[in-house]
Amino acid sequence: MAEPIPGSDLAAMLESAHRRTLHLVRGVRSDQLTGPRLPNVNPLPWEIGHVAWFHEKWVLRHLYGRHPLRADADALYDSIALPHDARWDLRLPPLAETLDYLERVFEALRDRLAEKDLAAQDEAYFYRLTIFHEDMHDESLTYSRQALAWPRPDFGWAEAQGDVIGEGPLPGDVYVPGGTFLLGAGPDEPFVFDNEKWAHPVELAPFRIAKAPVTNAEYLGFVADGGYERREFWSEQGWQWRGKTQARHPVYWQRDGGEWLQRRFDAWLPLRPHAPVVHITWYEADAYCRWAGRRLPTEAEWEAAAVGQPTPDGDALSLRKRRFPWGNEPPTPRHANLAGWATDYADVAAYPDGDSVFGCRQMIGNVWEWTASNFEPYPGFTPDPYQEYSAPWFGPRKVLRGGCWATQGWLLRNTWRNFFLPERNDVFAGFRTCAL
View (tube, rainbow, N blue to C red):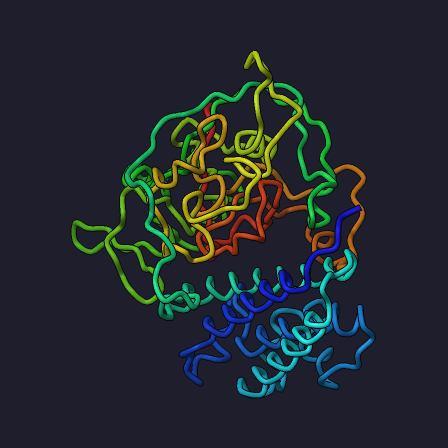
């Protein structure tokens, strides 16, 4: 049975998430609040109101039986009841009124936590659930700022939280022995989402996986070789996507004479050769692999390379694994590029202190990484109280692992499963490859 945790710890997490949300909204002009209608962007006032509503629904109302602070909150902000396209047609309150709702919910949560020296496990679960939900929406708002060419967010940092350690490329593969690997989270975790439950044995053959994600320079070789025009490298669905979008290169790339540029928020900047390629769909990652004579790792292979450990003789995978590639202690700015600490992508050779036992780098932070695996339930899956988190989305979505530079660090562990449709390219996602 997990121990109670100090209310002050939860209050600090809540304050951090709240502060980040406010920084992501700061400076948005009134004409930017509701448009344009894009499939992967929400109207900003709706998204802020939804974050407040989710806190209120699962903590103030579910845990403590409070009445809603807004009588119309369910009608306005319930994401399950409101299809995405319908959110632009709502009579949403003005942003100032929405921010006032967010503030009132935050103050009510903070006041409840101030009464608790220790929060019982059931209380802590729902506080964590709603804080992590806000963290995920803050990351989504960061995607939106990129998609809409708004200025780069500062996340409230006065300056970067630490120097980026290391630069340049990191070519080559590492060898991971085969054997029985326990995929998924164990019951000793203080919090996991339902799709991570529970650790179960899978059999893996030995494999070789890249030390680092694919870089811009490596991906540029695929573009320069006509990879987007060559049907032999694309799956049937991928080729249909390419034809529909008329893609010839990653979505935020642009050629200016003899130089390639990449749009980073509201600025076009020279393409950095050793930074990871990003804003890549699963289809593009899969096509690159075919061109390069490689493949995407399965999520079990990815997790084994990140946190698995060999048996003493090195011939097989042990049943033991770590929480993070470097060990069990939480990430710091020496280990990983997370939480906006470095304010942008690092080169793939950065953060050697975060290496896994097998020598893979950046398997936490910098860019999300597509895997070959469909998002499916683990054996014995049962939904948690927030039943819509995973169950409606099993099937065609692909699993991503590892987090990105904008992901809040305490949200992650190497069993954390993200999941998006294969055509998504707004996500801060890249990929690494395996040998065939």
